[in-house]
Image (cartoon, rainbow, N blue to C red; front, side, top):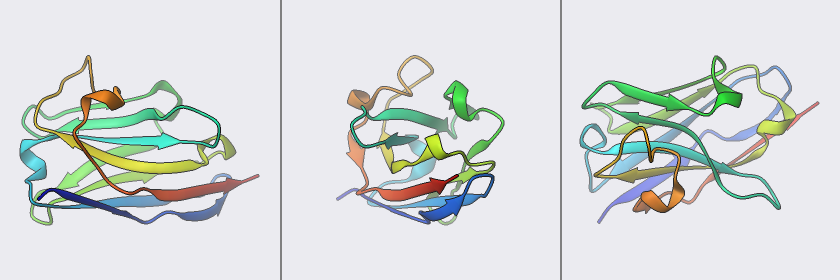
Length: 126
């Protein structure tokens, strides 16, 4: 049974950093398309970053490019999201997601991913 467990969220001031982790079990992250999504209150869930180890490809939404970095540790079977220069508008619940299929056209489509974690809250104060 596939399970994704996020951690690392918290409250920081604007300009600060956080590193989110997503520990996977029942699957191998290096063989799946992995993604980070976020959902702020009253807003739709949106794709933040995606990665596929098989092709070395990574994807980011424009608003986080240059500030966020998605990566994975295959030995630990864990996905990460390093978030720097955080802004109040980054405040949201962050989720990791996985699917065996994927690519540049679907990495940010929440309906594409089969497996989801429970989320970790990130709050950025000004």
